[in-house]
Length: 382
Ligand code: ATP
Ligand code: MG
Ligand code: MG
Image (cartoon, rainbow, N blue to C red; front, side):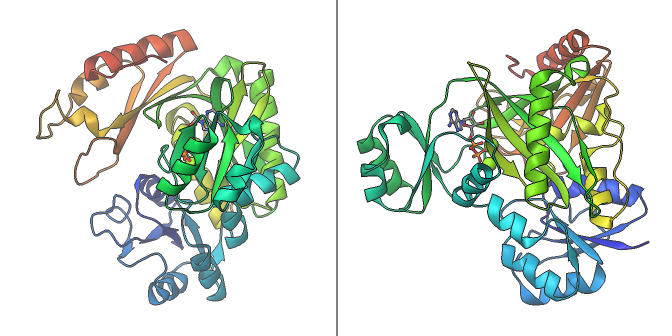
């Protein structure tokens, strides 16, 4: 079969490999980590840095098309691959915009999608002159933040100046702290021919800045908020001339307004539910879009609650040594499907796997999810 390339060796890359292999492709993964979850299942693991010129030439030599699994892939690497004749999906231009919050927010605003009131902060003077309406606010590093890292809540200019200093004086955005009712996200795929497919929006709950639970009520998939978010996400993908899978995170405010938070140029943790509760998963869509194949059906098969499994679960109370959670008890719950990422070592806060819990309706999915959470000792407030 043909080869597809993957820059990045984490769990998203691993699940892409599985989907690609089941469609008859071979995958070459570029990642420096010899124990990378994706490298372990790929037909070829090129162990080199993401910007290694020789490795990029090798990848382009093997694969007709290359995709990525993390937003901080150097845009220059995608350009280098394109220079070697590989198709890059998404392309360097789209990735460059969404990996920098200053460019991302300017782009969203130009595209007519509402964002939180914000101000680019490149020096302390920009904090001194920022509008009062941005306090209380959140100062976010423009690049390289994830899971709430690289951002600080600030209630005054003094705190913002201190936070800017603490973040190393890097370019940041200061955005107003908004009154959130809840958070949702939309995953979509756009093909080479401009065709698009959209999944129903997931409702997301975070714990300690990390996604904990995503749920999708199959009966509410065509509700007003889900539809508006889907339309905004499509508008974003069109404006980016995007090819591949993309996720947009939204805030639903207490007054009902929908605000775009950020864009991920790849499958997303909040889209893991699609692996079991949708006709075609987000990873298979990424394979299809990357390979230039027709996109698949995003229809829902069930209502679903996705529970993230963080490394903390491997440590009983304050134990220093890790032990494997009781998977048999999880699998005994009807509708529960377990996905482990094959990481070499459990660490607190590290994403180790997830469980998709399906039900005929949302009440059943939630009731089963509570059983899974109970056997694992997971707090479940969502
Ligand atoms: P991710 O892991 O999703 O990439 P991140 O580190 O890029 O996270 P954001 O998604 O920007 O960070 O913010 C993390 C969380 O902080 C949001 O999901 C939301 O709960 C909260 N948050 C961020 N910005 C705002 C805001 N302007 N007003 C209120 N809450 C916010
Ligand atoms: Mg982010
Ligand atoms: Mg986010």
